[in-house]
Length: 292
Image (cartoon, rainbow, N blue to C red):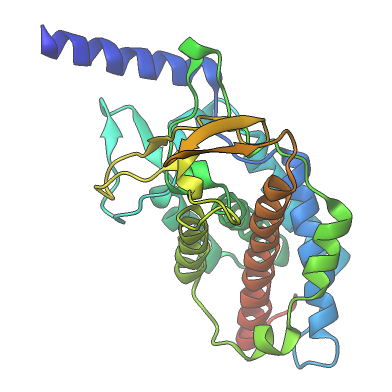
């Protein structure tokens, strides 16, 4: 009976995935904004350096692939975007659905290394940038399975939280160019790991002055190989929530400034990861001494 129940649960999960499409993070429009802001800020940092600035055409190749992957499609239903905290070999569900991003990410790295022409290089970079940006989304990194069609829930509320373009552009303009350009040239794997690690640390941090952490929204599993789950606050980022904090009650309001600050930090991380990936490309192309 228990075996039958597990089989039914797995079949239900597969059916839900097929009905709901890709487990995406940010909307395509948000991905595009991240990419364009990052390119603008990186070019500011590259002024006067030995590296060439990104051209408008190169930026558009990156943005096009970034948006294309965010939009998904039928094939992407079998290539989900959850991070593997244990970095173990890919696991599959009934040999059909792969819930982790790493196999496809490594495939993209190989395709990027083999790319010859300018359009291919920057297009492949765009697919990688999409994953890096998604690593600033807590539900994708903890990770928490949020496509729950039986509850009419198809996304994590953080992913749809509005971005403050003005505050984001201002924060991005404050990124230290000297530190960026002088830092060792991290590999693409390092960028994925660093970005995900920053998000995991943020989730484990206390919420402003409250005696709780952001794990009340996204709770990490004790076993890093396992999925986490929604915490006591549930999938309610951005909403009014009240919960017990020891002997007192903690409350967050609709569009609380605390939400805004947390989201802005994650969005700035998306810009930073994108800039570092673009910088990696400019250094690589310069080292290859090929036309960009």
